[in-house]
Length: 460
Ligand code: PFF
Picture (cartoon, rainbow, N blue to C red):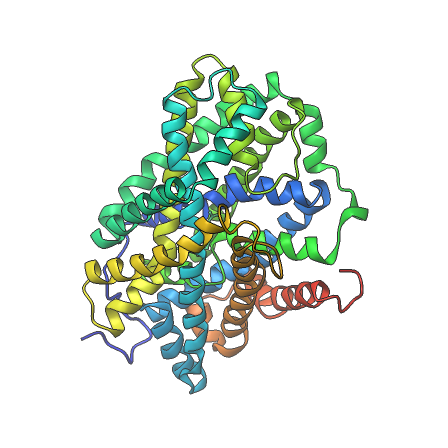
């Protein structure tokens, strides 16, 4: 029996083998489609420059303290996010009602993965398109045609979605350590290496200057309440914070590992990959007269044009989409983990049963996203298509609200002793900085951005 009464609990599902393993796993969760697919297209839709600046501020001022809060809560509770929040809520404030934060997260993860898997499926499909030479010397129009055929046919897109969900369930069913650690150790450096190589291509063949200006020259007049909310939503999404994924991973973190150093390493790696991806993509977009604001298809339409023109492009493109699939895969696993851990602990399912049931539910919801790029693409309400609404609801509302509750809990509800115990028992400068960010900076920033986007300051 786990010792429920001791603040030093043991994890119910084993531990990461080392601090490095944890850093890799959390980086694997953070680095994914959010960096390579979503960041460039959302930055493009929101005018670049100023958006990127707001995004960076959100990552460091809001995302980092929330990531630390999630890890410390996770490690202290050592259970799935629902049980952990109930347990710590009871312990710190006498009410288990905080479990709702965990439930909110489990549901958020399920919805996010439902569409995430569809986009990841596109990447899987592109592995085969690339390997077959479909992009060799292809014009922009031809690449756009290939993309349109893939996403517009529900049977094709649905098949790739199914395959991606299948491989995700497979790894989660095998257990966190065996499946994940080994994969991330090799794939992460490979992804960064390939992006650096593509950066070389972009610098030589793309409109590099124009790309850099678009990304880094702040044009504040283009910033609206809506785009500030987008930037904050992107910061949450890319760091995987706000829904308990990192909390679930924190439950397996060994006692002695430093939460601060781990979080900083992950945030830097994640931000680096996002900026690198954008620096590769925009010069290619501008050199080929493409539209930076073209939306979710941006990466799938711009990069293949470049691959098609470069020597050895078939191989480079194939490797790129393999790596993108893997990056998405390691994120998908973390999106499932809270729900799977919950099923195992509450419904007493085995890991294999839990992963299969959760996987089927997510797959089914994902079919709606598949259809929203095909037969249902004209069905529009609120924010746009079904996909647009899932994306908006999770990233711009659920993650920030979830993150806000998590950071309020860690900063205001938890006793100073408890949080210091996890971050730094000496309660030194770093701890005090974190506590200030968790109590004041992050909550106020999230609330202001949400209110601003609702138009309360009449700028959104
Ligand atoms: N951070 C992942 C990405 O950037 O692709 C997506 C993600 C994973 C979001 C896990 C949320 C999460 F809990």
